[in-house]
Image (cartoon, rainbow, N blue to C red):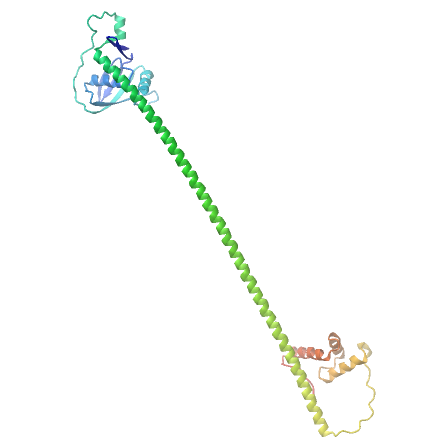
Length: 326
């Protein structure tokens, strides 16, 4: 419906509503199409002044409680249900200024029919101006609320975007840090392996040097023992010769019979056979085959053959030198 007075009109709806406030019920008819107008109508219904602040709520078909905070939401409530029921929460100045507001009457001189009475309610021009100002204020407030809501939504979106970017940056930094730690650990592991390999190589080198030194000392000891054996044999031979000369003065030696040649099974010449006999006389045994083999192995070098036989005898008998017959 519309409110008319001296050329001024305020939009009214054709909807009535049952309003409940703290257990009290009022039926408010012809609710205005604006939220502020509806609040004024409800204040009048309960006798409150303009100092009362009202919060309007209604229940939709899904059973959800809807709080009305803008003109758009108020229009949605008016159009949603034919039998609208409102629950009102009041705060502020709740002083009752009147109990029963006077019914609205047509202005004097207005001629209206029954149908026109249902479509028009005549009001005082000051009330129309107040309604117009209220509508303008409601529209400005609605626009401000929409702008504030849009700004809040944009701020929330920007905040979410910043938080998302910060999380992505943090995740990227974490991955980079983990990669750096992995590379550093791999470098440390590689250095540790290289250090161990160097230590093992150094230990092996030292072990080889020790083994070579032991072999060198053993060789020197063997040569020293062989030389000592030869010297002892020579000294013993010299002593034996001196003793023999003292007991048996020299005399003319009979013509020497030709020395027998080597046995055929040895397969050696006369020179090698003479060396074999020399070794036999020095006390290295009568195994002519063994002695000839030792001489051949040392290329008829008597000194080397003597060293080899002396070392073999020392190992076999566990003595410091061979037993040499004098």
